[in-house]
Image: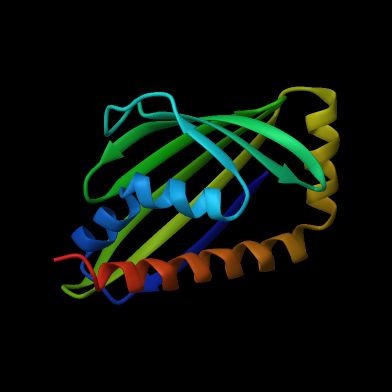
Length: 153
């Protein structure tokens, strides 16, 4: 199953990428929303990894997340595993003008177990609402990024 969205940000691509790679700030944001996040690899760039615990659909879940590709200032690819579900998230940054950037987000869910297949199937049945919610979350994240970019010199 694949979900895609895009958002435009009033900031240069380099600033947007810098905000996206401020992993300390992003970890704090996740913790502020109730997730437990522990970086398991301190090296910045490809190979960085995290263990995360969070609530999804009223159940406690855990995930291992790795930054697989980091090509500044154009692309990042994350790979995550939670139970029998593998998730790949690709962030592509495109320059629209010197002060405007488009971020394309593609998320691919791949079930590896029967329970993960059932979860993905239930998500597919609600895909219209799921896509609308995904678009809204990406829009909210873009607004947050735009505000963060104002503080990056």
